[in-house]
View (cartoon, rainbow, N blue to C red):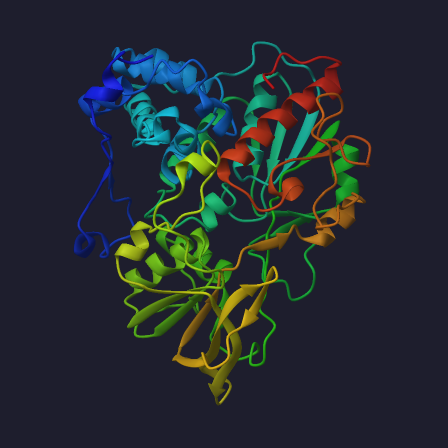
Length: 488
């Protein structure tokens, strides 16, 4: 694969970023991708390693050595064919996937990994520019009708695969545009929504009927889950109208922080804050938008969602942004001989952190403080592990000023009332209970109702959602037809 001695001759080339002062003025993407010559050099670094662990490190099992080699040889059109054979939406993963494939790269044992994600990004962007991404409608229709509930990456991937198998697919979304958390969770500066819009047009050209602003089932009273539905359909009606129903609604119930003062104004879930900005970016008018301008912002949660809150707050013009993580600060460099080829625990600094943020580790919030019903600050304490548990360290209490607090501590489970409406059994974590076995895979306890993506596996990555959507599509196709030619 690549150039035989390429890994010894060439260094890793990172994608570039536009300057911080420039990119803070807008919400557009600011990553500078590899040009054709740089991508060729990165492809040349791919080793003929015998056992390409990158394939297994990638949840969709991208055939990475092959498309690396094709880019090295300048055969870009076949490179996108190889990439699309396993991944419906490489423009999504090429932008926001954390690249577990690179952690598993054989070269990563004692050197810098091949820039797999940047090559993927370059392939799909060129494919769109050259007009190689086209609709592939089914040549023959089966007459079977499938409802896909939830239009995130799992739902979009499943809908596309099922449509290409010849089924009449309707994709339901409770919000006004498809994309799920890609649309109303991932900031535009990480992934512009035009990428979703192009795929939506492709889905429709392939025969998928897209129905937005439709809530299937109901949300609990007072739910903070984003919902801009104008119409409601009952689960019973859906089961009556369709030959199969695939639930891909995601894991949307945010993890709360029930400490004294939680009911003060100015404390919000990240998923109240981020979707509003995306909606405004789309040109919609929104009354009472949550804004960080002129405020001292505290983000509680050290993951990607917290980082997205940091970047958005800085673009609003926050006075200060501080991010808390309850876990200890990880090492700056992982112990590769110990962890390779698995995903390593190490300090990860995002582009949003580099734009301006104070990061605090091993910090637990004890209480929110306020005046006249509004949050003004919070009390914290440092924690450490003892006997496998996080315990407070006496004498480390501290107070922080805060005008806006954003809770970005992940998601606990799907909305229970939706699953209950279908009568779907739940596992111990509140997710839809469905096996991934090849025979009868992704089927729930309810006849002809399937589940895939975060609604089944819990909060996870976009690349896992795409994989589960593809696999579930095969399972549904097999259920309807008795066999399936769709890839696993």
